[in-house]
Image (cartoon, rainbow, N blue to C red; front, side, top):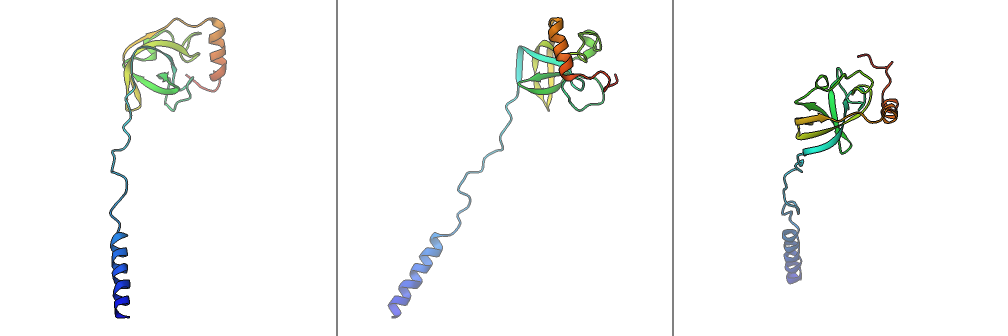
Length: 139
């Protein structure tokens, strides 16, 4: 009986030692790092971030849409590119621009920005009616 008790105790000790937590089974990894978005002479949508892209803001500021995500632009402004509130202005419709630069801190830092000619009047009217209510936003 004494031997049986010793065997049971030995099995309990082995079981307890074998079941000890040796730490996490996965390795510690660095959090996912965001791959920076860099563009070189790429055509993107450009417009007023607040009027056309529905972004939060305190006024009419230039923004671009890259892969479906909108970013305010540093390095140039709407005033540098046509009349923002004119028929084909960026508060009235979404335009296209050829840009170079990169996204930093959730803003697009432009090293070059060339606004392309407006689309045909039909395209501009469709873009304007799709996302701009001229009575709802005062400029």
